[in-house]
Image 1: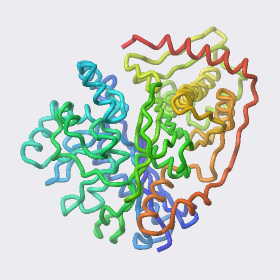
Image 2: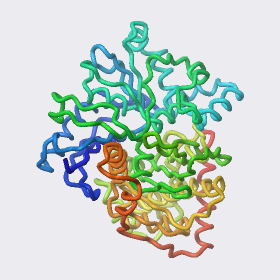
Image 3: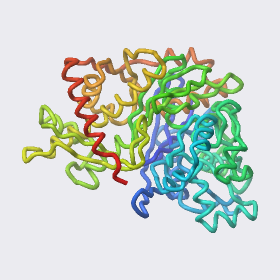
Length: 498
């Protein structure tokens, strides 16, 4: 069995990738799913549709690689973390649309929490009290969906992040599927204690979540079960790795040492810094979270900064404004002008995440004149990605006391060379991209492979990391600081809208 499979379930699409022993891709297939927007601030997915897409992409990747499911030594799962699914264990059907991490419907409910409650939640979970995380989404489902409350009363309800939903289905579903999650996903719910790595009774009490509906918390790298032989693999394959997408990217970027960091550019932007076995509690608006836990080894922790809207700002230019027809066009359009002509775009569509945590913020475009064109707006959208990343990395340096000399990057936008050059210029450090940029899927494959002995240890994985491109800063510190000061002015304009 010469291959490892990786199921990468993201915010906008699902894909299955197959890697060989050197971490090279030998087959892959990817499909988008619908974004369901019932009203302003609400974002949902159809979990049944995601499961259908999962079966399709597995079949497509196996066909492209020209192998059978039985040729896989194991599979790993990585997923869009905080997005919350509730399903009925007897029927196998979702009880409500999944509530996506971007959804802000619970902001008003969370604003009623007393300061002492909020500080207890933050201390125990490492997270600010925000609608981003799963706890309040679960609470909303219990209070507002009769199928959910009825299923809980009958003992048939199961809750989980998307990894749990997929694991349950892959391992047999109604015919004996297992109900587990890993520490990285559990650490995104507001319900797990960072120190004990278990569901915390006090936190569950704050949100009114019954312990019985939640999955058992496991490490990120162990055998949780095997795929149903009658399912999409056609054979029994060990399911041996689970990591939330950003933690998976840390593993894929082989950031195994304290002080190593990466930034993933996807629908949103996520920067993590490995803090080793120490929980570093942020004073600058970052999250304290799990990095990963491999089997019986000690848990490794991280600081994280999350930006809600980066790649999805480019989708907005394409789908809502219609000024581009594909994401790749952004680079050509933005390159046609030398600057933004003073235009700044802050895409705070669902508030601002780290380091601001302002759910009252809304998107703004400022500095417009008659001279501004769609090219200037496209360039401002790319700059917004880079400025938001700098906001987070500056906070990370302040919290950790470790100066940053370079940043490892991965994800879709890293194919945009102009954007990566802007990132180097705005931050004043080198930006480096690995040969295999799909580090999220690779990280889940690594976790699964380590669990079954496909790879011996992390030292073997480190040797596989190779650089494909490096960008060095080309601007002066004066220009960099001037642009950043203007960005901060634009941020001020977003506040107190909602």
